[in-house]
Image 1: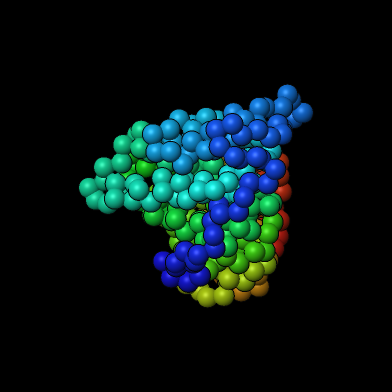
Image 2: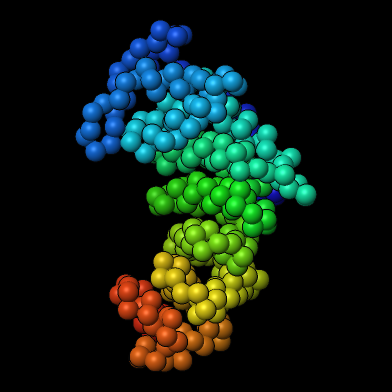
Amino acid sequence: LGGAGSRIPGVGIGAAPLHGAGMSGAGMSGPAVAQRGGGQQQSAEEVYHHVQDLRVAERREHALLELSKRRESLTDLAPILWHSFGTIVALIQEIVCIYPQLSPPPTLTAPASNRVCNSLALLQCVASHPETRPLFLKAHIPLLLYPFLNTVSKDRPFEYLRLTSLGVIGALVKVDDAEVISFLLQTEIIPLCLRIMETGSELSKTVATFIVQKLLLDDMGLTYICATAERFYAVSSVLAKMVNTLQQNPSIRLLKHVIRCYLRLSDNARAREALRQCLPECLQADPTLQHLPEPIMNCLREDSATKRWLLSLLQNLNLR
């Protein structure tokens, strides 16, 4: 991968001490780990022991499973993972050790996929947290997921791996952060997402399209994609193929992201002119939206926001 982040700089991942955790061996103690939703506080010792177990090969798989199951209920798990000694290195080790299983002929098994996906779930927690997100980017850890996004096998272990990897990138872009957008635009994330949007499962397509949508919604991302005809047509042609596919296999959640991408592209003058020529006919054939293809019309009945976006798109293009 070229551009920024083609190598992992030495930034001391996970070398800082765990703040206030009292990680001083097997008898460590500390404050309870806060849970979301105001529920009972969970024993800090139990969480910290699982974190310590990540550094022990024989106990790592169980620790990965336990921590990944609890990640959404623990508000400060991400800082604990990042600042505890050796933890992030252990998660990275889990990722890179299955790279050989991706090469043709692929040998990735379901148990191996599940295990690395538990590691990715913990990294998604780190990517989502405001304290650890900048550190996660500075270490260029998202690039370690790109080999998973670059796979094409439709077998379930690969699909699960792609979807979980997309979830990590989706967590990064979910919060509007110019640093995240700037980082991702210097990598191969757009071509990787476009291929998944074209060939992946419905759920993978939805997450990949959401990522492209979030990139477009940032002015930096819109400018980047519309800077050259090649980039614009790479995106618009995949969107057009998706619209055609949605006529056979309707999905409101997927159509919503596709229409939102088109609407955002129409905010750029050059892209707006091009879209007048290449917007799929089924979206522009009926300015009143009363006689659209039935699968798309049914989707729009389910989601008034998407219908408004389509009307705004047609207005921007002077097609209604």
